[in-house]
Length: 397
Image (cartoon, rainbow, N blue to C red; front, side, top):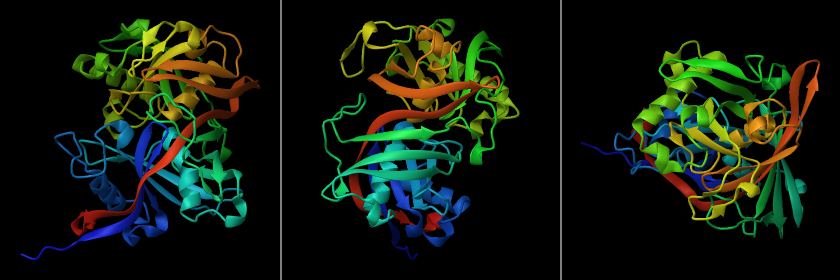
């Protein structure tokens, strides 16, 4: 029996915020993979090492967590006032499934640096020293992201002294502006709150009726009060991720919330939307010890937030969920805003399992509808490895 050699594809393995992923230029992919479809999904699954019934992704680049089972495709943009198009694929660990329904806010921080280093940005736009502005079209959800990328001696600066809780080592700061994060694709409009309410009564069989803020900003997110589901908001991963009953409860709440938000028709469809919506629980400030051993005092934060990602408690906070947190905190009356003490605000610092994070948002009430012009946060990014990904050729057949 003849055995065909592996194919190799140029790729870069990058950290962005508290996530890692494999980055590709669209033009470097095999022709069949340059368009959406089964061939693209099959390739990315094999790159990451999924589906893996062992849950380890040993035979691929994935790290067996939602934060490290990610892929990105970047190309020059044909849209006016944009430099690159950014497409994000969240790869399931144990299923043959790539979720294209949302963005990754953490990896968004790596898109600008990748685009510059990969020659996708006109050289005239890159200063010798200073900040390069990269205008990104987030193709999954039809939103604009503006990345402020530090440049030293004409190249992307990756090292620095910016510290991000959830990332072990400091690096250079990349500021991100998520423009009109609650607008529908192409600015068609639509409500930030799909149900029309800042707080809903969400009936969940087997759980009860929960107060919930369901918002579409950054990423569709369902917020509930920690106390209503038996938590304090100070939990770390081990308190939830080893509890099968708790994980099932969160998935049930997520499914019923997704139906109320109009994202799925039936709770039975939730398996096809593993990446969205997110579900998070909030609480008023309290002292706790982060996963690194760092003490977080109640006075250090405005509120506590814990969020689920791909069926597990996230080790820090998803970037897109941080946009939702900042936006909801800016709107008086949401559960997030109330946990933060109520009132109007343009920035919030929240506690998560790995520490704290600050995010700003500018929201306003227009004709009875809340809108947000942009949300701002800082992340960092770094190339971990670059070269070629190798995969068996039969993954494309």
